[in-house]
Length: 166
Figure 1 (cartoon, rainbow, N blue to C red):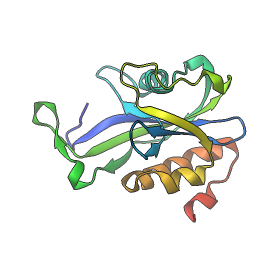
Figure 2: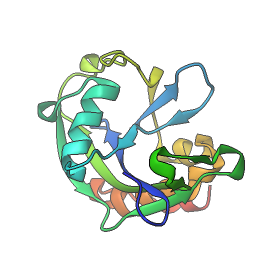
Figure 3: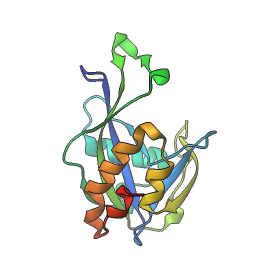
């Protein structure tokens, strides 16, 4: 769904290991790492999209995680000019607006499965520190990642201050 300003509604997923490290996934065929994310479908709430995307992208179900919180508002990023395209019905697509969710893994990491959907998004994953995610994510998403981490990481009793200055 694209709003009147050209932003696609989306959810972002920050999945934490019990030790505080974060789930970091590599896009298939690219050296591009990111958090799982995905679009919100028509008549779907952000929370419903969260659990659908969690299962589609990394094979986990609601019972495998604990929902710790979400961002208070939409966080937006614009795509660089070379990535812009017309979307269906002529709507101009300029970027994503996202509600970010913080989850804690409550089951074995062995339950992670990257090929549960017909078109997998990722081919590899690892646990990393929050600082790594901000340094490695593609530049046009960096500010949104930093804002999501600054808002959500305190829910894990972990200070994000070192992230802002890395």
